[in-house]
Image 1 (cartoon, rainbow, N blue to C red):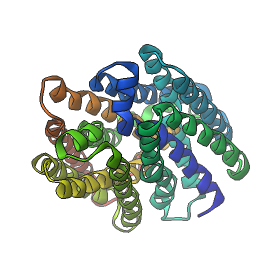
Image 2 (spheres, rainbow, N blue to C red):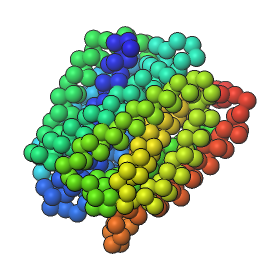
Image 3 (cartoon, rainbow, N blue to C red):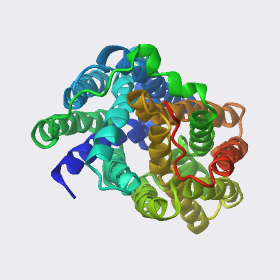
Image 4 (cartoon, helix red, strand yellow):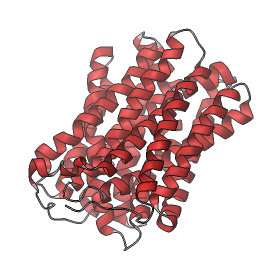
Length: 389
């Protein structure tokens, strides 16, 4: 792997720890801040809202800047937001700082995917983006379980101090290893949004919102479900989260290779259908440790198996507005994240066990599958169907 790709992947590793560590430490945060687990789940939503706000802000502020300079600025904002979150012990301030920490997330993926595509060999665009995304899967394989362990043994704050240290390493690696690129062709502020007048981008955006939102109905509460319903001990959750992360790593790797061979939309559509069925099986197997682990592995694999195809498809359908288009997948992902965390918490609030968080997720995930299928049928003769600008 090139040093430049490692730098981009290190960035997504840090973002992955910042975002996904919350899933493993929700009970610890709820206990420390004297709030309920659904209230702690709102910290997930706050981060997601920051992602949604950050993408259009990037277009407004930084569209004329060199790509490397944008990346460095985003990393500095990431460091500040996570450091402030780790230092705060007041719920309202924690919500605010989680929003700040989320601001650079989608923008980083948007700029990073453009850089990755520029450095990729012809026909290897999806694999290049998957290489960048691999940092986030490694975060879930190693970083998040480590953060879960440290949170249980000491305090959740240590996890986010580590996130800050990783941020410093990201800044140094980008400074040293990312080559200088000229600013993108400026089509004006309005020009960045012209691609959204077409149907293709919206189908990918909705596929992402619904597909990821459905999975996050369940995954946002995977820790309490695995301990309260399935029967795993708190001490074993480090291993459980590592197994979930392994599913993400394998899903991302396999998806990148298959997408370059069979087209991103075919891989994305099939994966989305598998995800919907898997959520159903998660509900019915909730009292079996072996079956719960298996279907968790498949579900988290699906979560990242669609990530690179979605990223490259929207980027290819956003010519003239690549910076916004590249960021929009993470916006869509985190809208799904926020909606999923909220809807998944409703059954718990109503007195049902965490097992029932997957039920609303099934219906939402099916909507994602149908949106992906519609896109695939519209573009079955073209792997990308880029929009003429």
